[in-house]
Image (cartoon, rainbow, N blue to C red; front, top):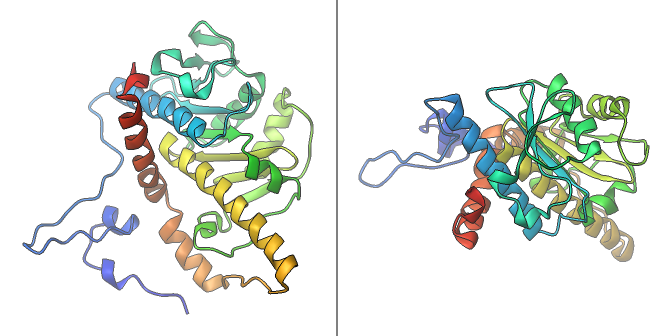
Length: 285
């Protein structure tokens, strides 16, 4: 039987969605961090660009960079059919807000002086077009993501963290080489469906979210979950012990606790804080 969240019954929706218990002994109600509200769309544009630049730094820290492969996008809140991307040949660890490239739905550079990754445009443009609620998408050639993608299979629901992707991830079971065809981008988008992640067979991982923070955290978590899955697969063969799959009722209940957009956004904030502290905020310029 699935558990119930009785400890959160007196919390407001935001705290409850993030699993935050916020009642102080003196009676104060403590509020968990949540996506900020903005007075203007220009302020939101700056916020999105700052958190996009941070995501590249966080990815670099975790070894998700590989040459010119990999890309993260965020939709512009003013020009909503445009999105911001990384310059093609700049290392993730060096990207600042001022380096980001704005492209339109035809792949033309609107702001910036560097070319973009053609595969990034082919994939991200289709996702942003088909999924208006998706404001960010992440793709990188992480080691564990690549390794697990070679099997062309979905994850087993064997850990609490894997439940973030319960019935919200899929496999794109084709390999068409470097994605330079918009039709290939459409097929990947179709495989993604309404989910938050797709495993690109023989390629790597792709995640999406309503915010750049959410999409970036899903990617970090998905790569770690692929790593755990690979370890379990190997250990099962070596030990003879059988993995335990979380039952459907518990999986469905828990996925709502750990896989919601508020939780995804919140889970990225420690990474953001860390990268600001490490760089003294130098990437924000």
